[in-house]
Length: 286
Ligand code: SF4
Image (cartoon, rainbow, N blue to C red):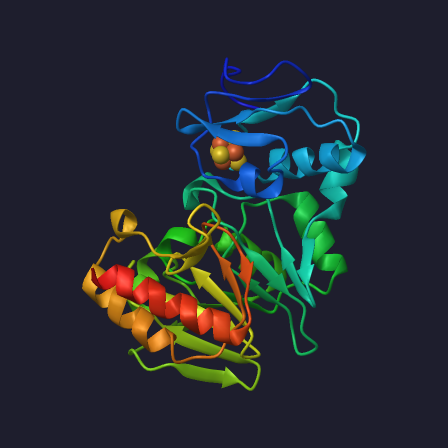
């Protein structure tokens, strides 16, 4: 059920954005053909005609954290719901169904033979739960920081999953099964490393998978407009100096993918990533 009134910035047609939009950017990332930013909110600036574009617009509708996307016709909606979690690469999936409590942050599912990981949390959705169950459930939930926990407690309870969160973020999940202490990185498994990157918040962590995929929470993202990596001082809640130092430490790690909570995902070669990190750190220090 969508919320709010249709904006007059939408072009006429099936899909529309309402005044409930919080400008989280999810719809523009998922269906850039259909949605654009207009006057600091999203709007439908091209109605989708091709079937695959219609499905993407439904993906955006499903993922919108505030129910701010509506459609007159629902043909394709149930198919789109069934598609979640959406495959990204290898055994990594985008969960969609973002939560207003995490300002529409992305969450991810990693399928692993020793137990699946949920990285940050979507909003509670019975349809998503059913699909995740069919994919083997969730054994572990890694929470990058307190802002993006959303409905992690419900997913943990439903799947008997163990949550990981840093001690300095524990207020958001007081009954988490694993509370990480200190600021040293932890190689939890040959495939997974927890890296402490305080700055955005005091106990922010990122999750490095197979030295290739970095689940970066709100520490780091790609910015399509800048065509570069980005970190945001205006949403740095703890310390920009500390976040910059964390970025310098993180630059010593090897990774090729960045999968953030907010902002765009990106794949770069290791050399391109190193160069992009150097450039970002210079910008953060200026
Ligand atoms: S996903 Fe929803 S809240 Fe986010 S920008 Fe789009 S319409 Fe707005």
